[in-house]
Image 1 (cartoon, rainbow, N blue to C red):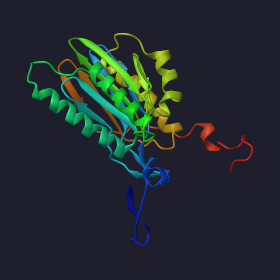
Image 2: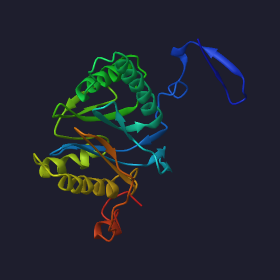
Image 3: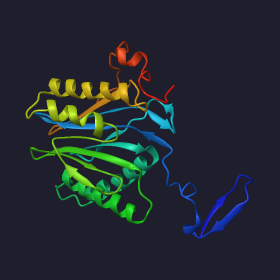
Image 4: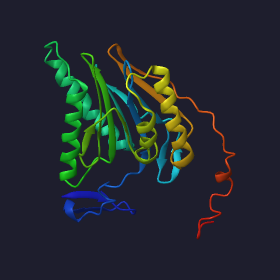
Length: 247
């Protein structure tokens, strides 16, 4: 049985399968948009903005969506912020359990990526998914690893990845301009180009970005900053001019 209070503060109980999707919390409320990750010469770079949207309202402006996991991994998430916090709780327990063995070994990015895949797929099979797409990157023993897990448990690894709108707008740029052995400066420049395109085209994006890196020496999440923008393009002046049925 599952009990909730209605708007008159009257408690009602019913089997869980009777509840609507809204009552069970199966729809996202506060969400973050795209995360982009790429490999570069020394490790992994990841980037995301700090916006949190309540529906279509950009409610929160300083939401950090990238976190260091253990000694070797960096995690970024788009989607529901509270579900991301739940995933971080799972990972805290996993890392604590791993450290308790005190055997000189620690979980690497590939192991954590596989763990997240099983968590997301398990929740999907219960018809109660964690509403996130995750980017997991890291370096262990000189091996760079970068992968994605979707809310349905689909997963893959690649040299450059993106979630959300970045799948449509950033990935083509990455396929065209990413190259093996990029320096830190080159990789940051490429990420900023992708972030700028997303800022122009994704209504949920804001001009406040964070970049994080992880190398063999450790992880760094840099303070948020803004990019220089230009809104004078002719296509921006009257975007609905040739689109029938728009305002």
